[in-house]
Image (cartoon, rainbow, N blue to C red; front, top):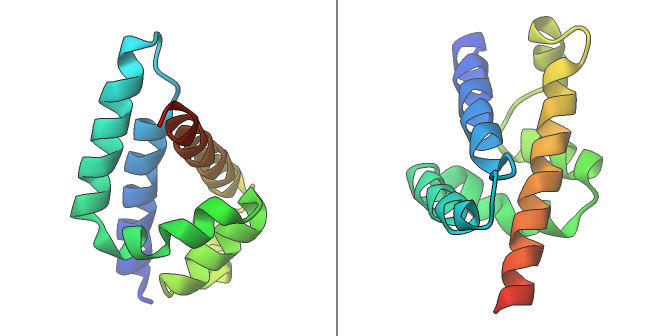
Length: 107
């Protein structure tokens, strides 16, 4: 993967992170779910791997996702030497898993 594609991927992961942040109240839950579904429609390459990400622990899920999307983890290190983005990605995966778990409990 080129550096440009890696930057684009990191930007999409940031979008996902922002969507997965906990809403301030219960009315925000539905809006967050809808925003997530819209994002997944715009990013079908993520949707394909979603089931595996939801099933794994967050750190292995991140490793899986990076590999599945063709991003070498060493490339991220160039942009993220202190591993802040990687930590944010793990937190995003935790939030994503919580969203789906909550949705299953509702349904």
